Image 1: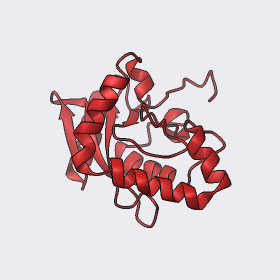
Image 2 (image 1 turned 180 degrees about the vertical axis):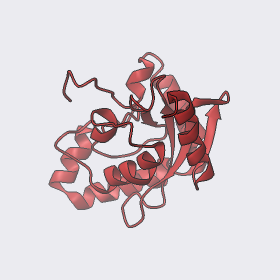
Image 3 (image 1 turned 90 degrees about the vertical axis):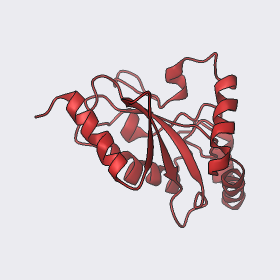
Image 4 (image 1 turned 60 degrees about the vertical axis):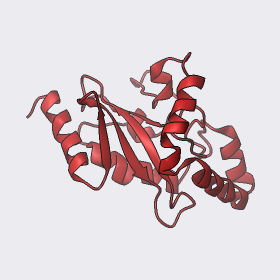
Length: 182
């Protein structure tokens, strides 16, 4: 079995060789941004999100931290911080998963099948349960407003100034050691 460092490099290399646009922070394979497209045939179609990924030292034995940099309207994503409530990333992560799984399966499934009963965004959850058509319209409005490449740097700058007092981990996906629950 390869070392965690080697595995980290291999997983990031697979992302870089795929269709995803990946930008390392200071040439560090443990800290990077990836451009993620909304799933086809969903209200997120046509949207592009800049996603910040941080890999812990003991990756793949500990899950990556995932956060949307530009705004997204979704019950399981905190609108202001971009943190993701995604069970497979947060609590049931397995070293068998790869980063490619996160972007090809887990995040698309999250966007296609939101869980309004475990929300980080109460407004989105409530709207989805009460008025799905209005929820879809608001998602599309956010896609047009915030999920275009031209808005990446502007939106990221706004978030950086509004969340500068929060702990860096709070702006990423919540990671549990299994001793607590969401």
